Image (cartoon, rainbow, N blue to C red; front, side):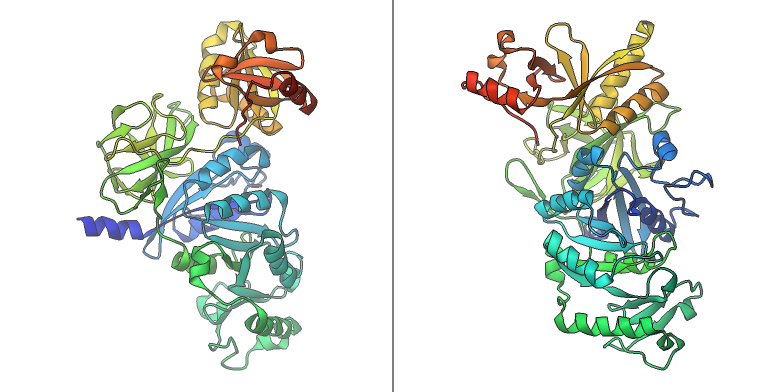
Amino acid sequence: MIDAIKKEIESRKTFAIISHPDAGKTTITEQLLLFGGAIRSAGTVKGKKSGKFATSDWMDIEKQRGISVTSSVMQFDFDHYRINILDTPGHQDFSEDTYRTLMAVDSAVMVIDSAKGIEPQTMKLFKVCRMRGIPIFTFINKLDRPGRDPMDLISELEEVLGIGAYPMNWPIGMGKELIGNIDRYNHRIEQYRYEDEADRFIPLNDKNELLAPHAVQESTYFDEAMEEINLLDEAGNEFDEAAISAGELTPVFFGSALANFGVENFLSTFVDFAPAPQPRQTEEGDLVDPTDSKFSGFIFKIQANMNKAHRDRIAFVRICSGAFEKGMNVHLARTGKTIKLNNSTQFMADSQEIVSHAVSGDIIGLYDTGNYQIGDTITMGAKNLHYEKMPQFTPELFMRVSAKNVMKQKHFHKGVEQLVQEGAIQLYKTWHAGDYMLGAVGQLQFEVFEHRMNNEYNSEIIMEPMGKKMARWIKPEDADEKLATTRNMLVRDRYDQPVFLFENEFALRWFSDKNPDVELFELI
């Protein structure tokens, strides 16, 4: 039995897809699901005219605006592996959701626009992956459109991100002149726009040379590509599986998600080298082995109203060790409670199915009536086990928020409470009156909040901008109203901890100079 579960765990591949907005992250997710047999046809994020929307973009506002603003979880089987994909929001205003998602994966796929190269959000997310030491696989997308020189893109990867790059394939032409890819790893040429498997691939020898004359040789782009392949062989990085596992070398794949070119080749190679579930760090400094027989996991995301008909609330759990079985009792480390896990689900974006068994590496959803918080550890074994804390960002923008209709206060308070618990927006209250204020990293978070309050909780709200503030926490014993001025407002966070909202850097420095004994803290 233990050997069977160990084999199951080793078959898991759990990864996040990261990118700058518009690089094609959600489109490549759709194609991966297509190859895994999870969907019949691929929609795109910008599918408004056709009425086909991306499967991973299940929220109404995502479909209306053509953006991803929440992480989605999808699972499918491919080539004897169970794949768990976490598609993350590309928009920088939702970085916190993405950072937490990256805590729940064992590797990451970085999608880059071939015309734009490394963009700011890609760089930020890459740094988080490097900080966590997880392997990174790179897909350079939109090869069917005019783009930058492939050698320039590889150089930029290495210079800007400071990681070694090994191209697994190499384009022959680009845009309208795209002929195909030279597959260095599988020693073949994958031709562009060939549906028939027999015609699509041209075999090469182990030096990536043609075995027999072929029409592809007639193109000057083929000669250029072969010269560049020779240069990569002589002067480029060597393929090193250990360096990939350590996050020091990224395998690079060229293709087009929209044209469904190079994606299947990427997936079949990715599963060969992406890691199985890895040991997890605890706050106590221990490492928990994924094959440990005792079940444990942590909650990295809470999402309300994935099913509008039932107004559900789902806590997403990354299983870190052992196996989940429906009906099992677990210990919730934060509260000390014992909870029976009867209602659980696995995901296909907006579609869910009841799950009775899952193992380390899998992501499951627990139907939640208010028991869980982001960062909670649940275990069957050691009750003093706590997985690493989830990152929380210090908000920069603030809004006063109130219900437009005082007769609908119940809807208002329920909506605020549930959306705040998801972690994308933070709640503060005025010191005495307890009036609500929201803090966020970016403006889009407020727009999504307002949209969801109106559509999901039937609560129209009034939002009054307070502008940028610098939030700093203080010790409860230092909370003194006399320290508050028009330039630094004393408020409470959702846990009733005292926080000062400073007007600007000058106000913060002035306060620190005047009150050197009051220690100020911030989040990430």
